[in-house]
Amino acid sequence: MSLIQPSGDLSAKIKEELREPANPADIERDIGIIREWLSKQPHLPKDMDDARLRTFLRGCKFSLERVKQKLDMYYTMRNAVPEFFTERDVCRAEMAEVLNVIHMPPLPGLTPNGCRVVMLRGTDKDIATPNVVESMKATLMIGDIRLAEESVGVAGDVYVLDASVATPTHFAKFTPALVKKFLICVQEAYPVKLKEVHVINVSPIVDTIVNFVKPFLKEKIRERIHIHSNIEDLYKYVPKAMLPSEYGGDAGSCKDLNDAWRAKMGEYTAWFKEQEASKANESLRPGAPKTADELFGMDGTFRQLTID
Image (cartoon, rainbow, N blue to C red; front, side, top):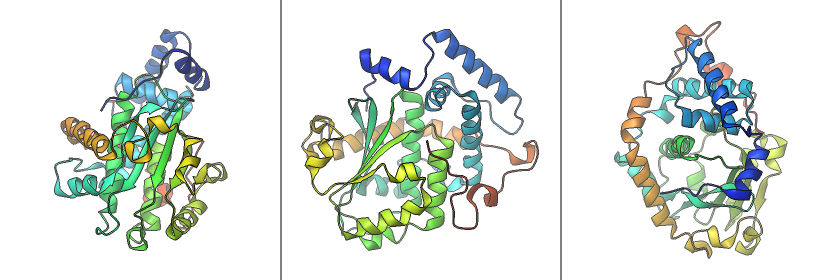
């Protein structure tokens, strides 16, 4: 699956929004600064390649301090939440089952303002609830691939959630503790800019899900959640043509898009296996090691969650 990269005026607009230096040499200088910083962190791996570092820089609007914070958390999460970052193999039965019943492909195209659109939909409301940890693991696997393959930089992410097959039984498996860990991973450890969330094919369970998540989110993210009563409303935000065929678009079927991403994830199997050893070593961290208490809290709040 190839991701269309921005070019021309759109690329120029995105670079301005992300505060990307006009001179490529300045980007290389920043990469060098981050590499020097990593070399002085005894608890962090030194294996971050240039392509991923550029994505971190863009996602952090070239703030070196924010990049350092994100990278520290990127490796810290791999130690703190190993269930999300081990056995990342699409051929495993548990992972294969998730990819059979949940489609989660990033779409090839871009919105007019340069955002990547990610679809998330179940295939059948009558199936048993898939393994939630495996579902979250698959999402983070795609995130890792995009770190390397978003070679130019996009303005942010737009998520489209199709709730047509969501049931209370499915939702019951999403515990507050698990959701907290996942959201902190996404928002603290990855250079993601969440621009919009659109929920379509709504049902009464959608209100329950949104109300469950909202208390854990910053106000600005709550304001970016859009509930649509019909598909035409979605087209005001996401062009119809770039959507999968199930939603009137020209991008191909969700199944074909998902299968293409499954194949892409399979190409990274050896890399995912190597990365299992690439994590923070808390015994070597200067100062006190980061504990689960500090990272995730025990009082039911998202103390550490910051979303821009």
